[in-house]
Figure 1: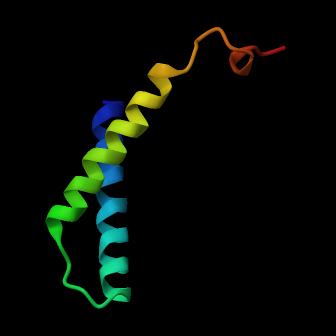
Figure 2: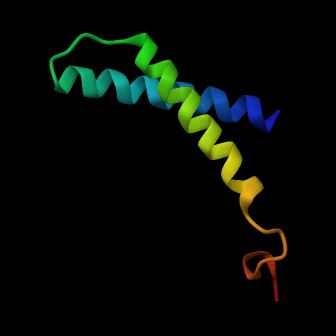
Length: 62
């Protein structure tokens, strides 16, 4: 479920960023570019926690 929610939020945020940036640069809105951003950012966001070590000092609660 968290993967689906992550992808949905990244989709909305990347489409919003694509719309704003295309408006600021006076270029046509490209849905494909937003989808590419969605896939790239989603993969990055979902892989980073998997690469972090589980027994690091970050998780130690004292």
